[in-house]
Image (cartoon, rainbow, N blue to C red):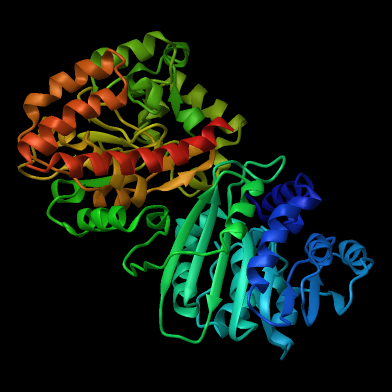
Length: 544
Protein backbone atom coordinates (compact mmCIF):
# COMPACT_ATOMS: atom_id res chain seq x y z
CA UNK A 1 0.00 0.00 0.00
CA UNK A 2 1.38 3.42 -0.94
CA UNK A 3 2.22 5.98 1.72
CA UNK A 4 -0.49 8.20 0.27
CA UNK A 5 -3.17 5.51 0.67
CA UNK A 6 -2.00 4.73 4.20
CA UNK A 7 -2.29 8.43 4.99
CA UNK A 8 -5.79 8.52 3.50
CA UNK A 9 -6.91 5.57 5.62
CA UNK A 10 -5.43 7.09 8.75
CA UNK A 11 -7.17 10.41 8.12
CA UNK A 12 -10.44 8.57 7.52
CA UNK A 13 -9.93 6.79 10.85
CA UNK A 14 -9.45 10.13 12.57
CA UNK A 15 -12.46 11.68 10.85
CA UNK A 16 -14.70 8.76 11.83
CA UNK A 17 -13.60 8.88 15.45
CA UNK A 18 -15.66 11.02 17.78
CA UNK A 19 -14.16 14.08 19.42
CA UNK A 20 -14.97 12.47 22.76
CA UNK A 21 -12.94 9.37 21.90
CA UNK A 22 -9.99 11.33 20.50
CA UNK A 23 -9.67 13.38 23.68
CA UNK A 24 -10.45 10.33 25.82
CA UNK A 25 -13.21 12.03 27.74
CA UNK A 26 -15.86 9.89 29.42
CA UNK A 27 -17.23 11.77 32.38
CA UNK A 28 -17.14 10.32 35.84
CA UNK A 29 -20.44 9.58 37.61
CA UNK A 30 -20.76 12.00 40.57
CA UNK A 31 -21.07 9.10 43.05
CA UNK A 32 -17.67 7.77 42.01
CA UNK A 33 -16.05 11.21 42.06
CA UNK A 34 -17.41 11.76 45.57
CA UNK A 35 -16.07 8.42 46.78
CA UNK A 36 -12.57 8.99 45.36
CA UNK A 37 -12.35 12.39 47.02
CA UNK A 38 -13.55 11.09 50.38
CA UNK A 39 -11.17 8.13 50.34
CA UNK A 40 -8.25 10.25 49.19
CA UNK A 41 -8.73 13.06 51.70
CA UNK A 42 -9.59 10.81 54.65
CA UNK A 43 -7.18 11.38 57.53
CA UNK A 44 -5.07 13.99 55.70
CA UNK A 45 -5.32 17.47 57.29
CA UNK A 46 -5.72 20.27 54.71
CA UNK A 47 -4.61 18.23 51.64
CA UNK A 48 -3.26 19.87 48.52
CA UNK A 49 -5.17 18.23 45.66
CA UNK A 50 -4.38 17.84 41.95
CA UNK A 51 -6.73 16.63 39.22
CA UNK A 52 -4.66 16.06 36.04
CA UNK A 53 -7.62 15.93 33.63
CA UNK A 54 -10.52 17.80 35.21
CA UNK A 55 -12.89 17.96 32.22
CA UNK A 56 -15.88 20.16 32.92
CA UNK A 57 -15.46 19.92 36.68
CA UNK A 58 -17.29 16.86 38.07
CA UNK A 59 -14.71 16.44 40.84
CA UNK A 60 -14.76 20.16 41.60
CA UNK A 61 -18.55 20.07 41.97
CA UNK A 62 -18.32 17.10 44.34
CA UNK A 63 -15.57 18.75 46.35
CA UNK A 64 -17.84 21.74 46.74
CA UNK A 65 -20.83 19.62 47.80
CA UNK A 66 -18.80 17.55 50.28
CA UNK A 67 -17.39 20.64 51.98
CA UNK A 68 -14.11 18.79 52.55
CA UNK A 69 -11.33 20.57 54.39
CA UNK A 70 -8.58 21.11 51.80
CA UNK A 71 -5.73 23.55 51.36
CA UNK A 72 -5.79 23.94 47.57
CA UNK A 73 -7.16 22.34 44.43
CA UNK A 74 -5.49 22.53 41.01
CA UNK A 75 -7.28 21.19 37.92
CA UNK A 76 -5.40 20.62 34.66
CA UNK A 77 -7.42 20.40 31.44
CA UNK A 78 -6.14 20.28 27.85
CA UNK A 79 -9.47 21.14 26.18
CA UNK A 80 -10.04 24.90 26.43
CA UNK A 81 -13.86 24.69 26.39
CA UNK A 82 -13.92 22.13 29.17
CA UNK A 83 -11.36 24.08 31.16
CA UNK A 84 -13.55 27.18 30.89
CA UNK A 85 -16.56 25.26 32.24
CA UNK A 86 -14.55 23.97 35.19
CA UNK A 87 -13.14 27.43 35.88
CA UNK A 88 -16.64 28.88 36.20
CA UNK A 89 -17.44 26.68 39.22
CA UNK A 90 -17.14 28.79 42.36
CA UNK A 91 -14.95 27.11 44.98
CA UNK A 92 -12.43 28.62 47.34
CA UNK A 93 -8.71 27.93 46.85
CA UNK A 94 -9.42 26.37 43.46
CA UNK A 95 -7.53 26.97 40.23
CA UNK A 96 -7.99 25.52 36.74
CA UNK A 97 -5.11 25.56 34.30
CA UNK A 98 -5.68 25.07 30.55
CA UNK A 99 -2.58 23.16 29.50
CA UNK A 100 -1.20 19.73 28.64
CA UNK A 101 -0.66 17.54 31.70
CA UNK A 102 2.48 16.05 30.16
CA UNK A 103 4.14 19.48 30.07
CA UNK A 104 2.87 20.34 33.53
CA UNK A 105 4.18 17.09 34.98
CA UNK A 106 7.67 17.62 33.57
CA UNK A 107 8.00 21.30 34.48
CA UNK A 108 6.25 21.84 37.83
CA UNK A 109 8.07 21.69 41.16
CA UNK A 110 4.82 21.48 43.07
CA UNK A 111 4.01 18.32 45.06
CA UNK A 112 0.59 17.18 46.22
CA UNK A 113 -0.99 15.14 49.00
CA UNK A 114 -3.65 13.70 46.71
CA UNK A 115 -3.95 13.27 42.95
CA UNK A 116 -7.44 12.26 41.93
CA UNK A 117 -9.47 11.86 38.77
CA UNK A 118 -10.45 10.00 35.64
CA UNK A 119 -7.48 10.02 33.24
CA UNK A 120 -8.21 10.05 29.50
CA UNK A 121 -8.39 6.78 27.57
CA UNK A 122 -6.37 7.75 24.47
CA UNK A 123 -4.47 5.24 22.36
CA UNK A 124 -0.91 5.97 21.25
CA UNK A 125 -1.93 6.53 17.61
CA UNK A 126 -4.20 9.42 18.61
CA UNK A 127 -1.39 11.21 20.45
CA UNK A 128 0.30 14.12 18.71
CA UNK A 129 4.01 13.65 18.05
CA UNK A 130 4.91 16.17 20.76
CA UNK A 131 2.72 14.36 23.30
CA UNK A 132 4.42 11.05 22.45
CA UNK A 133 7.83 12.64 23.14
CA UNK A 134 6.64 14.11 26.45
CA UNK A 135 5.00 10.84 27.52
CA UNK A 136 8.28 9.03 26.88
CA UNK A 137 10.05 11.62 29.08
CA UNK A 138 7.61 10.95 31.92
CA UNK A 139 8.32 7.24 31.71
CA UNK A 140 12.06 7.87 31.62
CA UNK A 141 11.79 10.05 34.71
CA UNK A 142 10.00 7.19 36.48
CA UNK A 143 12.66 4.68 35.39
CA UNK A 144 10.27 2.95 32.99
CA UNK A 145 10.26 2.09 29.29
CA UNK A 146 7.69 3.68 27.00
CA UNK A 147 6.09 1.69 24.18
CA UNK A 148 3.58 2.31 21.40
CA UNK A 149 1.08 0.08 23.21
CA UNK A 150 0.84 2.52 26.10
CA UNK A 151 -2.52 4.22 26.60
CA UNK A 152 -2.77 7.76 27.97
CA UNK A 153 -4.30 6.61 31.26
CA UNK A 154 -1.10 4.70 32.05
CA UNK A 155 1.02 7.80 31.42
CA UNK A 156 -1.26 9.93 33.60
CA UNK A 157 -0.98 7.50 36.53
CA UNK A 158 2.81 7.33 36.27
CA UNK A 159 3.09 11.11 35.99
CA UNK A 160 0.69 11.68 38.88
CA UNK A 161 2.71 9.33 41.08
CA UNK A 162 5.78 11.48 40.42
CA UNK A 163 3.93 14.56 41.70
CA UNK A 164 3.10 13.15 45.13
CA UNK A 165 4.72 14.23 48.36
CA UNK A 166 6.73 11.63 50.27
CA UNK A 167 3.46 10.59 51.89
CA UNK A 168 0.52 10.81 49.52
CA UNK A 169 -2.30 9.09 47.65
CA UNK A 170 -3.66 8.66 44.15
CA UNK A 171 -7.32 7.80 43.49
CA UNK A 172 -8.32 7.12 39.88
CA UNK A 173 -10.98 5.59 37.68
CA UNK A 174 -9.09 3.28 35.29
CA UNK A 175 -9.93 0.52 32.78
CA UNK A 176 -10.04 -3.01 34.20
CA UNK A 177 -7.19 -3.65 31.73
CA UNK A 178 -4.95 -2.54 34.59
CA UNK A 179 -5.46 -5.91 36.25
CA UNK A 180 -4.30 -8.20 33.50
CA UNK A 181 -3.23 -6.88 30.08
CA UNK A 182 0.42 -7.23 29.12
CA UNK A 183 0.97 -3.55 28.28
CA UNK A 184 -0.02 -2.60 31.85
CA UNK A 185 2.31 -5.08 33.56
CA UNK A 186 5.08 -2.49 33.85
CA UNK A 187 2.58 -0.15 35.51
CA UNK A 188 1.52 -2.87 37.97
CA UNK A 189 5.15 -3.43 38.93
CA UNK A 190 5.69 0.32 39.27
CA UNK A 191 2.70 0.75 41.57
CA UNK A 192 3.81 -2.10 43.81
CA UNK A 193 7.27 -0.57 44.15
CA UNK A 194 5.99 3.00 44.60
CA UNK A 195 3.13 2.54 47.06
CA UNK A 196 2.77 0.74 50.37
CA UNK A 197 -0.87 -0.17 49.90
CA UNK A 198 -2.65 -0.72 46.58
CA UNK A 199 -6.43 -1.14 46.66
CA UNK A 200 -8.75 -2.12 43.80
CA UNK A 201 -12.51 -1.60 43.83
CA UNK A 202 -14.40 -3.36 41.03
CA UNK A 203 -18.06 -3.38 40.07
CA UNK A 204 -20.49 -6.15 39.25
CA UNK A 205 -22.33 -3.79 36.90
CA UNK A 206 -21.02 -1.43 34.24
CA UNK A 207 -20.95 2.07 35.75
CA UNK A 208 -20.44 4.33 32.71
CA UNK A 209 -23.58 5.08 30.70
CA UNK A 210 -23.37 4.22 27.04
CA UNK A 211 -20.04 2.35 26.97
CA UNK A 212 -19.09 -1.28 27.57
CA UNK A 213 -15.72 -0.44 29.12
CA UNK A 214 -15.30 -2.14 32.48
CA UNK A 215 -13.58 0.12 34.98
CA UNK A 216 -12.09 -0.25 38.44
CA UNK A 217 -11.08 2.26 41.07
CA UNK A 218 -7.36 2.40 41.78
CA UNK A 219 -6.58 3.61 45.30
CA UNK A 220 -2.88 3.79 46.21
CA UNK A 221 -1.22 5.11 49.36
CA UNK A 222 2.39 5.88 50.21
CA UNK A 223 2.89 6.18 53.98
CA UNK A 224 6.67 6.10 54.43
CA UNK A 225 6.83 2.52 55.75
CA UNK A 226 8.41 -0.59 54.20
CA UNK A 227 5.21 -2.62 54.05
CA UNK A 228 3.82 -3.74 50.69
CA UNK A 229 0.27 -5.05 50.41
CA UNK A 230 -2.71 -5.14 48.08
CA UNK A 231 -6.45 -5.72 48.37
CA UNK A 232 -9.50 -6.01 46.16
CA UNK A 233 -13.16 -5.35 46.93
CA UNK A 234 -16.06 -6.08 44.58
CA UNK A 235 -19.23 -3.98 44.91
CA UNK A 236 -22.48 -4.14 42.97
CA UNK A 237 -22.49 -0.66 41.45
CA UNK A 238 -21.47 2.96 42.02
CA UNK A 239 -24.29 3.49 44.49
CA UNK A 240 -22.88 0.67 46.64
CA UNK A 241 -19.71 2.65 47.34
CA UNK A 242 -21.41 4.26 50.33
CA UNK A 243 -21.15 0.87 52.08
CA UNK A 244 -17.36 1.17 51.99
CA UNK A 245 -17.59 4.68 53.41
CA UNK A 246 -19.91 3.46 56.18
CA UNK A 247 -17.34 0.81 57.12
CA UNK A 248 -14.58 3.40 57.42
CA UNK A 249 -12.97 2.51 54.08
CA UNK A 250 -11.00 -0.35 55.64
CA UNK A 251 -9.06 -2.58 53.26
CA UNK A 252 -7.31 -5.83 54.10
CA UNK A 253 -3.61 -6.35 53.53
CA UNK A 254 -2.99 -9.26 51.16
CA UNK A 255 0.59 -10.29 50.46
CA UNK A 256 1.80 -9.25 47.02
CA UNK A 257 3.01 -12.04 44.75
CA UNK A 258 5.72 -10.37 42.68
CA UNK A 259 5.90 -13.41 40.39
CA UNK A 260 2.29 -12.98 39.31
CA UNK A 261 1.90 -11.33 35.91
CA UNK A 262 -1.68 -10.27 36.63
CA UNK A 263 -3.69 -8.82 39.49
CA UNK A 264 -6.70 -11.05 38.87
CA UNK A 265 -5.40 -13.10 41.81
CA UNK A 266 -6.54 -10.47 44.26
CA UNK A 267 -10.22 -10.99 43.50
CA UNK A 268 -9.78 -14.03 45.74
CA UNK A 269 -9.23 -14.78 49.42
CA UNK A 270 -5.77 -15.53 50.79
CA UNK A 271 -6.68 -19.23 50.96
CA UNK A 272 -7.75 -19.24 47.32
CA UNK A 273 -4.65 -17.31 46.25
CA UNK A 274 -2.37 -19.79 48.03
CA UNK A 275 -4.13 -22.67 46.32
CA UNK A 276 -3.64 -21.19 42.84
CA UNK A 277 -0.03 -20.29 43.57
CA UNK A 278 0.50 -23.95 44.39
CA UNK A 279 -0.86 -24.94 40.98
CA UNK A 280 1.32 -22.34 39.24
CA UNK A 281 4.48 -23.49 40.98
CA UNK A 282 4.20 -27.10 39.76
CA UNK A 283 6.16 -26.96 36.52
CA UNK A 284 5.85 -30.71 35.95
CA UNK A 285 2.08 -30.53 35.72
CA UNK A 286 1.09 -27.99 33.12
CA UNK A 287 0.07 -28.14 29.49
CA UNK A 288 3.53 -27.07 28.32
CA UNK A 289 5.05 -30.18 29.90
CA UNK A 290 3.13 -32.40 27.48
CA UNK A 291 2.52 -30.21 24.42
CA UNK A 292 3.63 -27.01 22.70
CA UNK A 293 1.14 -24.33 21.72
CA UNK A 294 1.35 -21.97 18.75
CA UNK A 295 -0.97 -19.38 17.27
CA UNK A 296 -3.23 -20.57 14.48
CA UNK A 297 -2.60 -19.85 10.83
CA UNK A 298 -2.41 -16.15 10.00
CA UNK A 299 -4.12 -15.81 6.63
CA UNK A 300 -4.17 -12.02 6.59
CA UNK A 301 -7.81 -12.12 5.46
CA UNK A 302 -9.88 -14.90 7.00
CA UNK A 303 -13.06 -13.90 5.18
CA UNK A 304 -11.27 -14.38 1.85
CA UNK A 305 -9.20 -17.51 2.49
CA UNK A 306 -11.79 -19.34 4.63
CA UNK A 307 -14.71 -20.20 2.40
CA UNK A 308 -17.89 -22.29 2.28
CA UNK A 309 -18.50 -25.16 -0.15
CA UNK A 310 -20.39 -22.82 -2.50
CA UNK A 311 -17.22 -20.80 -3.26
CA UNK A 312 -15.14 -23.96 -3.75
CA UNK A 313 -17.62 -25.23 -6.31
CA UNK A 314 -18.16 -21.89 -8.06
CA UNK A 315 -14.44 -21.47 -8.77
CA UNK A 316 -13.61 -25.20 -9.05
CA UNK A 317 -11.12 -24.94 -6.14
CA UNK A 318 -11.36 -28.49 -4.79
CA UNK A 319 -7.63 -29.19 -5.29
CA UNK A 320 -6.78 -26.08 -3.24
CA UNK A 321 -9.41 -26.51 -0.51
CA UNK A 322 -8.49 -28.06 2.83
CA UNK A 323 -10.67 -28.92 5.85
CA UNK A 324 -10.65 -26.19 8.48
CA UNK A 325 -12.43 -25.12 11.63
CA UNK A 326 -12.45 -21.57 12.86
CA UNK A 327 -15.34 -21.00 15.25
CA UNK A 328 -16.33 -22.46 18.60
CA UNK A 329 -19.86 -23.21 17.39
CA UNK A 330 -18.33 -25.55 14.80
CA UNK A 331 -16.80 -27.71 17.54
CA UNK A 332 -19.51 -29.61 19.46
CA UNK A 333 -17.28 -31.56 21.85
CA UNK A 334 -13.74 -32.25 23.03
CA UNK A 335 -13.25 -34.21 19.80
CA UNK A 336 -13.47 -32.80 16.26
CA UNK A 337 -14.13 -35.57 13.75
CA UNK A 338 -14.49 -35.89 9.98
CA UNK A 339 -18.25 -36.26 10.55
CA UNK A 340 -18.29 -32.98 12.51
CA UNK A 341 -16.49 -31.25 9.67
CA UNK A 342 -18.90 -32.61 7.05
CA UNK A 343 -21.84 -31.32 9.09
CA UNK A 344 -20.25 -27.87 9.05
CA UNK A 345 -19.83 -28.15 5.28
CA UNK A 346 -23.50 -29.04 4.85
CA UNK A 347 -24.54 -26.08 7.02
CA UNK A 348 -22.75 -23.71 4.67
CA UNK A 349 -20.03 -22.84 7.21
CA UNK A 350 -16.65 -21.53 6.13
CA UNK A 351 -15.22 -25.01 6.43
CA UNK A 352 -12.48 -24.82 3.78
CA UNK A 353 -9.07 -23.12 3.90
CA UNK A 354 -7.67 -22.21 0.49
CA UNK A 355 -4.01 -23.14 0.02
CA UNK A 356 -2.77 -21.93 -3.35
CA UNK A 357 0.75 -23.32 -2.75
CA UNK A 358 2.57 -20.97 -5.14
CA UNK A 359 2.17 -18.81 -8.20
CA UNK A 360 3.17 -21.70 -10.45
CA UNK A 361 0.46 -23.95 -9.01
CA UNK A 362 -2.33 -21.54 -9.91
CA UNK A 363 -1.01 -20.29 -13.25
CA UNK A 364 -2.73 -23.05 -15.24
CA UNK A 365 -5.94 -23.13 -13.19
CA UNK A 366 -8.62 -20.75 -14.40
CA UNK A 367 -10.75 -20.92 -11.25
CA UNK A 368 -7.77 -20.12 -9.03
CA UNK A 369 -6.74 -17.23 -11.29
CA UNK A 370 -10.28 -15.86 -11.25
CA UNK A 371 -10.56 -16.09 -7.47
CA UNK A 372 -7.18 -14.43 -6.99
CA UNK A 373 -8.25 -11.66 -9.36
CA UNK A 374 -11.43 -11.29 -7.35
CA UNK A 375 -9.28 -10.89 -4.21
CA UNK A 376 -7.23 -8.20 -5.88
CA UNK A 377 -10.42 -6.35 -6.86
CA UNK A 378 -11.22 -6.29 -3.13
CA UNK A 379 -7.62 -5.12 -2.41
CA UNK A 380 -6.95 -8.19 -0.28
CA UNK A 381 -3.43 -8.14 -1.72
CA UNK A 382 -2.84 -4.71 -0.14
CA UNK A 383 -3.44 -5.79 3.46
CA UNK A 384 -0.60 -5.64 5.96
CA UNK A 385 0.05 -9.39 6.11
CA UNK A 386 -0.64 -10.16 2.45
CA UNK A 387 1.37 -7.27 1.00
CA UNK A 388 4.67 -8.47 2.50
CA UNK A 389 4.50 -11.94 0.91
CA UNK A 390 6.24 -12.88 -2.35
CA UNK A 391 2.89 -14.16 -3.59
CA UNK A 392 0.19 -12.47 -1.56
CA UNK A 393 -2.21 -15.43 -1.90
CA UNK A 394 0.22 -18.05 -0.53
CA UNK A 395 -0.39 -18.55 3.20
CA UNK A 396 2.73 -19.39 5.23
CA UNK A 397 3.08 -21.83 8.15
CA UNK A 398 0.37 -24.26 7.09
CA UNK A 399 0.94 -26.87 9.79
CA UNK A 400 -1.66 -29.37 10.94
CA UNK A 401 -1.91 -29.66 14.71
CA UNK A 402 -2.81 -32.56 16.98
CA UNK A 403 -5.28 -30.51 18.98
CA UNK A 404 -6.91 -27.10 19.05
CA UNK A 405 -7.33 -24.59 21.88
CA UNK A 406 -9.88 -21.83 21.46
CA UNK A 407 -8.21 -18.45 21.77
CA UNK A 408 -11.36 -16.80 23.11
CA UNK A 409 -13.73 -18.76 25.30
CA UNK A 410 -17.11 -18.01 26.80
CA UNK A 411 -18.47 -20.10 29.68
CA UNK A 412 -15.36 -22.30 29.94
CA UNK A 413 -12.05 -22.93 28.10
CA UNK A 414 -12.01 -25.47 25.26
CA UNK A 415 -9.29 -27.97 24.32
CA UNK A 416 -10.20 -30.20 21.37
CA UNK A 417 -8.60 -33.29 19.80
CA UNK A 418 -8.19 -32.73 16.05
CA UNK A 419 -9.19 -36.03 14.41
CA UNK A 420 -10.39 -34.38 11.19
CA UNK A 421 -6.93 -33.20 10.09
CA UNK A 422 -8.42 -29.72 10.04
CA UNK A 423 -6.46 -26.51 9.77
CA UNK A 424 -7.36 -23.53 11.94
CA UNK A 425 -6.89 -19.79 11.70
CA UNK A 426 -5.71 -17.46 14.46
CA UNK A 427 -9.12 -17.79 16.14
CA UNK A 428 -7.71 -20.99 17.64
CA UNK A 429 -4.27 -22.03 18.80
CA UNK A 430 -2.50 -25.10 17.43
CA UNK A 431 -1.45 -27.72 19.99
CA UNK A 432 1.34 -30.19 19.17
CA UNK A 433 1.88 -33.20 21.43
CA UNK A 434 5.34 -33.95 22.76
CA UNK A 435 6.85 -37.43 22.50
CA UNK A 436 5.10 -39.87 24.81
CA UNK A 437 1.92 -37.83 25.31
CA UNK A 438 -1.24 -39.90 24.95
CA UNK A 439 -3.76 -37.80 22.98
CA UNK A 440 -6.97 -38.90 24.68
CA UNK A 441 -5.45 -38.82 28.16
CA UNK A 442 -4.12 -35.31 27.51
CA UNK A 443 -7.47 -33.94 26.35
CA UNK A 444 -9.53 -35.68 29.05
CA UNK A 445 -7.15 -34.51 31.78
CA UNK A 446 -7.88 -30.87 30.96
CA UNK A 447 -11.58 -31.02 31.79
CA UNK A 448 -11.51 -30.46 35.56
CA UNK A 449 -12.10 -27.61 38.00
CA UNK A 450 -8.41 -27.03 38.79
CA UNK A 451 -7.45 -26.47 35.14
CA UNK A 452 -10.50 -24.30 34.55
CA UNK A 453 -9.81 -22.14 37.62
CA UNK A 454 -6.15 -21.73 36.65
CA UNK A 455 -7.11 -20.76 33.10
CA UNK A 456 -9.24 -17.91 34.46
CA UNK A 457 -6.20 -16.53 36.26
CA UNK A 458 -3.55 -16.86 33.55
CA UNK A 459 -5.89 -15.55 30.82
CA UNK A 460 -7.48 -12.14 30.50
CA UNK A 461 -11.05 -10.89 30.28
CA UNK A 462 -11.93 -9.64 26.84
CA UNK A 463 -14.93 -7.55 25.80
CA UNK A 464 -18.32 -9.15 26.32
CA UNK A 465 -17.18 -11.49 29.07
CA UNK A 466 -14.79 -13.51 26.89
CA UNK A 467 -11.74 -15.29 28.35
CA UNK A 468 -8.74 -14.86 26.06
CA UNK A 469 -5.57 -16.93 26.38
CA UNK A 470 -2.38 -16.66 24.34
CA UNK A 471 -0.07 -19.64 23.62
CA UNK A 472 2.35 -19.17 26.53
CA UNK A 473 -0.58 -18.68 28.88
CA UNK A 474 -2.17 -21.89 27.63
CA UNK A 475 1.09 -23.77 28.19
CA UNK A 476 1.19 -22.54 31.80
CA UNK A 477 -2.27 -23.95 32.72
CA UNK A 478 -2.19 -26.65 35.38
CA UNK A 479 -2.85 -30.12 33.89
CA UNK A 480 -3.40 -33.19 36.14
CA UNK A 481 -2.16 -35.46 33.36
CA UNK A 482 -2.54 -39.19 33.84
CA UNK A 483 -3.94 -42.30 32.23
CA UNK A 484 -7.36 -40.78 31.64
CA UNK A 485 -8.04 -42.12 28.14
CA UNK A 486 -10.75 -44.36 29.58
CA UNK A 487 -12.74 -41.22 30.45
CA UNK A 488 -12.49 -39.61 27.02
CA UNK A 489 -15.48 -41.29 25.39
CA UNK A 490 -17.73 -40.66 28.40
CA UNK A 491 -16.86 -36.95 28.37
CA UNK A 492 -17.45 -36.80 24.62
CA UNK A 493 -20.90 -38.36 25.01
CA UNK A 494 -21.81 -35.87 27.75
CA UNK A 495 -20.73 -32.90 25.63
CA UNK A 496 -22.64 -34.07 22.58
CA UNK A 497 -25.74 -34.69 24.70
CA UNK A 498 -25.63 -31.05 25.81
CA UNK A 499 -24.98 -31.80 29.48
CA UNK A 500 -24.24 -28.71 31.63
CA UNK A 501 -20.55 -28.12 32.23
CA UNK A 502 -21.11 -28.37 35.99
CA UNK A 503 -22.39 -31.94 35.57
CA UNK A 504 -19.40 -32.82 33.40
CA UNK A 505 -17.06 -31.39 36.04
CA UNK A 506 -18.83 -33.38 38.76
CA UNK A 507 -17.86 -36.50 36.83
CA UNK A 508 -14.31 -35.51 35.85
CA UNK A 509 -13.41 -34.01 39.24
CA UNK A 510 -14.42 -37.23 40.95
CA UNK A 511 -12.58 -39.48 38.49
CA UNK A 512 -9.46 -37.39 37.77
CA UNK A 513 -8.82 -35.24 40.84
CA UNK A 514 -10.22 -37.37 43.69
CA UNK A 515 -9.90 -40.99 42.58
CA UNK A 516 -6.81 -40.85 40.34
CA UNK A 517 -4.86 -37.92 41.76
CA UNK A 518 -5.92 -38.38 45.38
CA UNK A 519 -6.90 -34.78 46.14
CA UNK A 520 -9.19 -34.41 49.17
CA UNK A 521 -12.78 -33.52 48.33
CA UNK A 522 -12.55 -30.23 50.28
CA UNK A 523 -9.69 -29.05 48.07
CA UNK A 524 -11.57 -30.00 44.91
CA UNK A 525 -14.58 -28.05 46.19
CA UNK A 526 -12.30 -25.06 46.76
CA UNK A 527 -11.02 -25.29 43.17
CA UNK A 528 -14.56 -25.49 41.78
CA UNK A 529 -15.65 -22.48 43.83
CA UNK A 530 -12.68 -20.45 42.55
CA UNK A 531 -13.62 -21.25 38.97
CA UNK A 532 -17.26 -20.36 39.64
CA UNK A 533 -16.31 -17.08 41.28
CA UNK A 534 -13.96 -15.96 38.50
CA UNK A 535 -16.00 -17.20 35.53
CA UNK A 536 -19.28 -15.84 36.94
CA UNK A 537 -17.70 -12.43 37.47
CA UNK A 538 -16.33 -12.48 33.93
CA UNK A 539 -19.56 -13.71 32.34
CA UNK A 540 -21.55 -10.91 33.95
CA UNK A 541 -20.03 -8.68 31.27
CA UNK A 542 -21.67 -10.74 28.50
CA UNK A 543 -25.13 -10.10 29.91
CA UNK A 544 -24.91 -6.30 29.77
